[in-house]
Image (cartoon, rainbow, N blue to C red):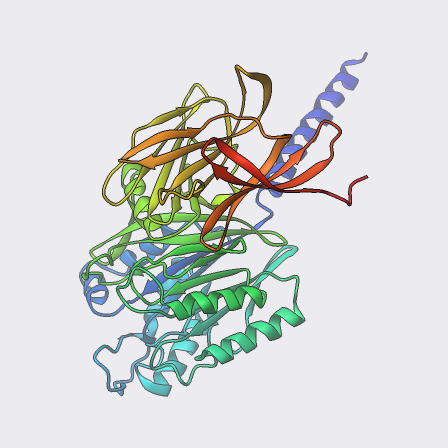
Length: 484
């Protein structure tokens, strides 16, 4: 083989390697990334700090957000030079020149749908829109239809609305207007992910109002793919409604946070392709009005606090942030070593040890349980008072062999949480057939276990069990009639 031919092969191989790397990187970064923050207020203490230490404080604060494509903030206030303001206790305003700082900090979209948009009346509102437009920042909330965000072949829509006070002149300032806009868009663009970015709720309250939860359910039924709230200035409940994430309040991002619980909050990042693929939460602390990142120990404390008034939500520790999932969607095969999940007022911490085994413990606002080492491969976790004794139980899907059944298969292990301790209630007993999935449900205040089981011939059965003194008794048994 000639030297020239050998050299040609080397060059071709090198080019193929470079092409492979570039293609891999392109595929890795092809999804759309959108980051959302909570409230941004540039007046009062924030303005004073910037006057003392310079505008770089604001730019640096915004650049702390990991945003590859789009950064969306809720700006409470105006960019105007007028002095004519409404008759209210708080009216926020900074020079129109300060709008350029948002752009320098990486902000791409600003919601003006909130109770401070008209602090300086109609002129202040128009000046704000113009100042943002001059700095190539797209406004949300000044139109009745969602704004379309695009990256390559992927798109999504963001609709901003305000359901508080002093917002009657905004396009969407009532529940009726919001629902009409959502229904209209969902009918016209049923395949396009729709995110509602909404100003609502009561200030300084850690849980949403009943009407908010009912509205969130209606919006999900109408086609919304995510709901992100702000206005209370504190973190509120996180929940998944039919796997749709609802963040009732992100809290503050940049503000003079001096009231209780207003100095800790988080940002949310969505990874989007044809739908919302992944959701990431980043805890932050506000020090002297500006956000700062937390170390891992501080993050653990805050994640527990955020989830303590949420239900059936799981946070998975990543390198820089936390991946959020509905508890029902967690399979414990993710690339993490720590899962923190909520169920009512109980938190569960699952840690994967270096040996590959898992340990688990529970916490309530008052105490923590013992730590239990799990034997086998953990795949799922649920909470229910499955034996109906008034005490919460932890149901685990664990694949393993046991002495009386030396076949590797999924088993349901149950622990009861009593007297600050996790105690075995039912471990490894075999069902009629192999358990593929299981769930719990309530009927007339009585809890049941439902399973999907597969026999040796591959036939699937849907079965319901109730707890008796010796384990589970079969209630219903239905074969899948659609299988061959």
